[in-house]
Image (cartoon, rainbow, N blue to C red):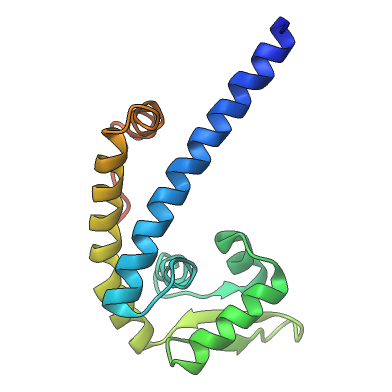
Length: 153
């Protein structure tokens, strides 16, 4: 194996480790959110993205980027959440093709219940991952990359 091959293998190993950490965290979040507030991780991500708008709304394509979903998958997800009364769509006044989405009062209430659970589950999953030798370096790198950064309220 040459130097170039070694570099490729190092990157591939890093990617596999990151993917393993992501899978572990997502599974823990999925279980906790589904059991306590009947939300999936991606549904929570929508509520979180909209909540961070601080009383404003988002265009559907912005929401698609925030959730890493396609436009059609985002539309289906928004429809499901709208059917549950958690968000609403608003037509853009100056662009008839534009559709905004925002949380309803029920969406805010559910988010307020889900957010502490999400954060506690994430913290617990990261703590558990930090005890696994193969995942510990990635967890440390995440923690170090956010050292001294004030949390977003």
